[in-house]
Length: 295
Image (cartoon, rainbow, N blue to C red; front, side):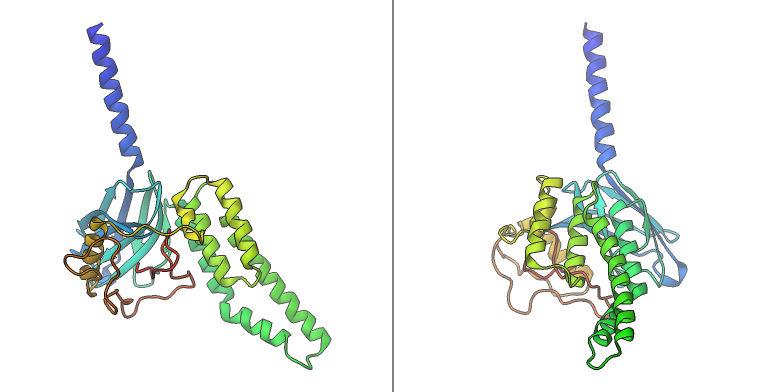
């Protein structure tokens, strides 16, 4: 009997260890020689709303590093920060093992990677949006609405515009209504609302109701809820925000002695780094409606 209990205890411990290991997020980073990043320190942060967590840090050795750790939520927006070089935003989930290669053409938002379901989907959407071009769509709308335009020419322009908008709508909606990632659904919804003329306030509310039914209880969806006020950052999150700011060469957003819930002093919030790539993604953190998303 004693041996049986010992075996059961050992099995339970092993299962617990396997479960914890399976839930860890792993990121394998490789940098191209032309980036000049060898022997640099790298940091992995995770964000949900106003809460920021340092997941892991490492040093690039022969242009490679491995980072791993437990994400605070089932899904988080994570940032790989390389001081003096820039940062890279991924949509991460517990248990994922992601490979990311950074070269001089790597994008800050949704860089090309392997192993991250949500990031790969958003990378494809943003790539196709760039190929079609926001400016091209606006130009087609403007030309089609020009007074005195020949009816046949107007019909041609409207047909081209409709075809391109339909393709982008299909890409975005396939991500919004995926059945695997609430974070992907939220980011795709933000993207779609920011870029599609078809998204009205009523249609957005209806969409949020559908997502809540699809992903019940997901904290990611709070960022789309006008009634959900984000919790103030904890002291630990404030400490991590200051660390991230120092690593980025920015002013610390929280002065020494600041308490959770206190407003930061005017002008003390971090400004975007010069040369940081812009993106059509609205400047909101997941779980945050009004505060600037600093990642």
